[in-house]
Figure 1 (cartoon, rainbow, N blue to C red):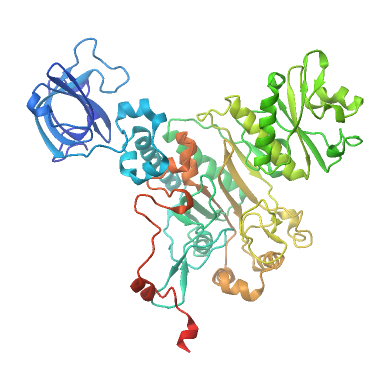
Figure 2 (tube, rainbow, N blue to C red):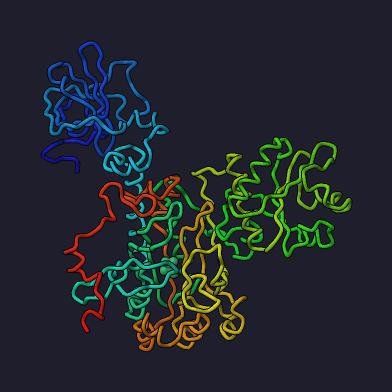
Length: 598
Ligand code: ASP
């Protein structure tokens, strides 16, 4: 499909097979080198790069980086010794006979050349500059690869979902609010002054309506919008691969998702062995101090609450005491242990107690003196340490302490170089609580409802079978039929079995403190739909940006989004968000006050 008015081939079509043939190519001047009257140009297009040779000085003289050219020439083998084994087109070159400059380029704000970009990847300008000139940033090969990979992933997903009987349905993005635990972005409705649409936080309610509508298997690459405070690596608008199925249970959704993941990874040349492992939410917290454990490495947390139950050390007289092993940590200089204290404080902890197991069974470190002789003797065995290791402790409230140790565990692995981006360790996390405390200061989700409880997932999540009768009597311990898919310590997606019975939905809403009137106002349309024969249904959504970032080995989701927002939701390229004119304010009715009508 290369052939157009401007070319007979793409750059990387030009290989030994075409030697002796005349070709017409178009693209950008990636790089130019001059050798005794001969100019060598790397010509780049969306496929990659091919070397072209210009013997005519007049023809070559005007060419600069990123000029757009169309040329014709003959393919020939490169002279011996000039091959480049790292390039697909490295054995050949095109001897140019005619050339047209289609567009010039100003001097660039930063280097984008395929070859040079690889050498200068570390010297990229700041992100605001990259985003302001995103169309140049996207010319860099690593970015171009990400954009292409994202497209390949979408294609693989669509193919396998189609094979599994899914129908792609688009749902509107100007809707009534869907509660997913964030603030809504809103759009003024000019035709109904004083009224607003919400942009969807997810198509959750709409996909449930599709189940009532009999679609049975739905998917969509859905754009979602959540107005959250700035958090690293979040975008105010993002994409989900959103799915819902009728007449299925949790196992069915998980099996379908596994097949999907396998197909997506295959598109990038990776084999994923199924079934994927599973861990309960409680085990994930106990062993890894995280509800999205990174399983590329081991080193689970060790609980020592019992071990220290009679301790004389006040700090360890806590509801939870745990530890994480720092293999070989005894050799760490004191100032580095001090730096760990600062690291912990930055995360809101008071500090990070540690002990060092020196040679000959010696136990050192600031807290060593606080623990009894007996405790010291058994400690090495209790934490699985050897001489030469160190161990970090956390004591206090169970979850907070575990999360601190979980973060230490990952930080240690990172510093030891164990977090390889092309190792993919998946796990399902299952058996989540149904509710969580609404006033948790560490949780910046917006509580749904007005009670002391809010939904762990969302208000439409089914309590697990064992809790169907009692979840509202014991919201603290009630469990749900929900599941997250995790890869390399990232939550790639999550979903749940939904409530399709209005009596259960009513009881959940009651726990959340959402009364009848509010429920009617917010999602009465869904509750009404459930009166007309709602099938049992369940679903899941994959965070598509995150999935692409993991698979491409990108550090940030911004690297897999063509035009992402910078910090604070700004777009340095177009200047959004921007003030609107007085006329537009009046027209859209954003300042409308019903009292003015009276
Ligand atoms: N709507 C959910 C979310 O955005 C996903 C799901 O339950 O399917 O997290």
